[in-house]
Image 1 (spheres, helix red, strand yellow):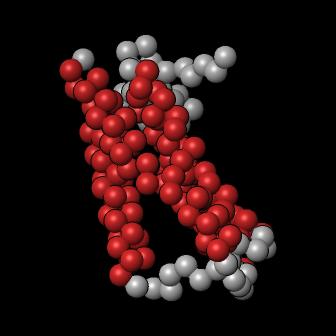
Image 2: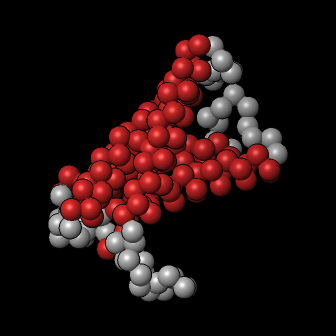
Length: 165
């Protein structure tokens, strides 16, 4: 049986939503890494190492940011782990977690809305691969649409729990 440890006063739905966030970002990151590795997912391969490094780092940073959502349901979201220099063992102020999380969710929402609009408004290159390549791209990127609402839900649960206690 799968067990997900969290603080005892965290609603189960919030724990599930927090654990879902890194999973919804994973397909797009794996797609980007596959492109850099030379898997024929695009009509043309990544040409220079700088572009490849950027794409891989984008995937790593996105996944790390997604993993931070777990802090909203785990003890390290309320007390800084002791191994962190200078601030280890101190309490996390609710605003220090809520404000960046909500700003991140707002930024993700704007990015998703812009990407959707740009695709249908004919801005940029659009999808230019084969039908299979385009289908794989869409299947890998559609889960990202769940990131902002999941993050908002978990953040509001964290805020409610931390500000009423």
